[in-house]
Image (cartoon, rainbow, N blue to C red; front, top):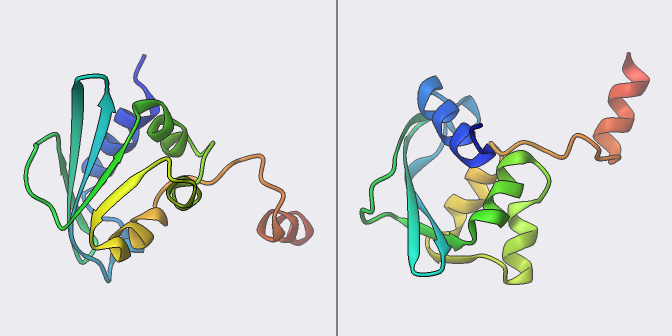
Length: 123
């Protein structure tokens, strides 16, 4: 069974274009630390065109966190910006890129915010 993190990155790479990143240019590497081992996911974004690899290369922005927390973010159970504010994730480099990329992560399906309420009223 494929985990949410792998599914998220592979789907993003397969699509090749993400319209919510149409004004975004840069590279973002996600470092998932588990003991002495670190797994890397590198996203190169050029006005919506997205390439994903598992290379450990230099990037404009580097996010560091645990595989478990990123799994929750990729599955929509956790919000990345909230995790940053709590100190559960680190960011080095251009933090604006994190805010732009945050838009492509799934939201919590059980959320009861204004959007969910409005969608129910429109139907």
